[in-house]
Length: 106
Length: 121
Image (cartoon, rainbow over all chains, first blue to last red; front, side):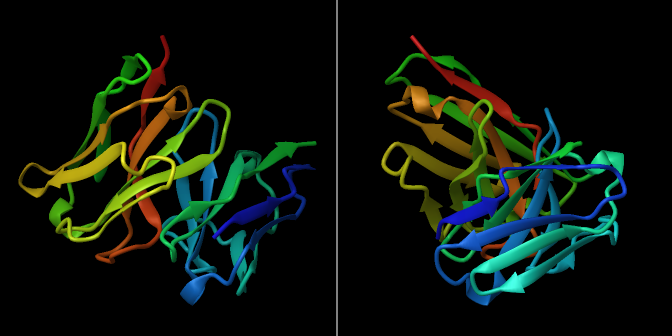
């Protein structure tokens, strides 16, 4: 399964709402869709699994939605620490990542 | 603290071999599926290989199939990646990552800090 994320880069200001998209080349089985955050020089961090379940310690401004082939990560009100690269991943066949969306400060 | 620590990276010539290790601590390693993920400089994440808790299920990305071998030693809480016939395009930071929960596959909830592999003459 090929995952395509859009946009490639998103320029927003703190306090704004961010909407990141992940589209799959075929239906993602059993909603096996995940989102990660990666900051420069760090390992990725698990944000969301099973499309919409936040991982331990992830603030509720992060939310995931979607089904089938179209998925969205929403950050309701951007904090300075949210500016990073975000990746979606599916784990049904067996694994693949999207190419990432860079969220930068406007 | 639950932790994964990779080691074994370095500079190797094209066609050479390298073995990466990942040491797990503060969790019951033998009950978790594990993975290797790599990231070329300035690029995105690429899943490399997966191994189930008892090594029954093993998968590889097409880009490494036939060249890389994943293995684990549950008695010593260690994961390995044996890399042969290395190419310039294998240059990357290699991360080991744990699958969340005692599932065959799933989200990666714990990641190591990564080890750099450079393939160059």
